[in-house]
Amino acid sequence: MKMGASIITRLTAYLKPDFPDKKIDIRPSLFNPLAGPVHILGGGGPDVEEAIQWMIHQVRGSTSYSTKVNVVVIRTYGSDDYNRLIYGMKGVNFVETLIISNRQDANRSDIVEKVRNADVIFFAGGDQCEYIRSWKNTKLETAVKSVYAKGGGIGGTSAGAMIQSDYVYDACASSEDGIETKQALEDPYRDITFSYNFFPWSHLRGTIIDTHFDSRKRMGRIMAFIARQIQDGVSKSALGIAISEETSVVVDKYGMAKVMGRGAAYFVLGDHPPEVCKPRTPLTFSDYKIWRVPRGDTFNLRNLPTRGYYLRSVQRGRFSSDPY
Image (cartoon, rainbow, N blue to C red):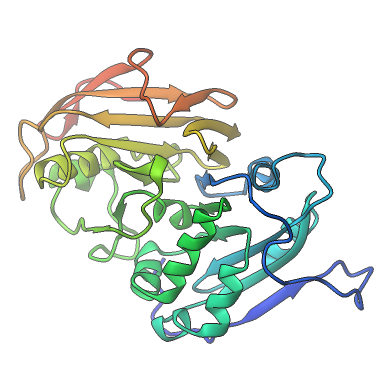
């Protein structure tokens, strides 16, 4: 979704309605050190509450500690509807939503201080192009990195998950509906652009994340994205992390990913050059390695598995066989 008009920054905090006068502590982290860094990557649609709770507990270091964390939700537009959901979870001291829709606000000292003092950051869904245009190379970006560096949690859903990868499909050159599988396989260059050097998370290096994967049949799209990284000389290999709706991939501090929620995640590896990847020409790329990981199962991002995958190819813009 594209947003043309700037939205004034709104800062909202949430307290349980039963205690409207309760004093809360919004100072920097209530305990030290934090036990991360960890991530959650949501595939869009209804949020996987189990995954958000997992991230909170991981940052706290236990499900039983009395210590609590401060959570900041960041988005370029929308409401503070995450506040009530997250505040009701165990181990949460404070929740605040920051709506930051332009670079001026992303460099405001008061906003940057709120982000720096958080223990958990969650990027809501939206438009990854607007996120990159409004936040990349700002003080806000630096503040988010500082939360990661101190062992915090960084998560997001839909576009908020896609901006976590090393290589980001930014959708800045595409129409409002974006590029889908058919167009990407027919021409892997037309209206497909990427952003780099946004968030350099250690266990997500060499990755490109896609969401709404099953409902929108995006396997060919992520295959084209992977081929582009290799063809364009960005990397000799690229790993796609493709997440279904109502599904989250959580990543612990050791680089172990686990699938939670309704569906599955697909890890798609291109580890050699494509045969044909050029403008105005259908893609040809043989033998992508694909791991389908259902809910409850894990995938090691730090040391990629050497088995358990199946191979699928694209020949002149068409799948060799069903890639799912």
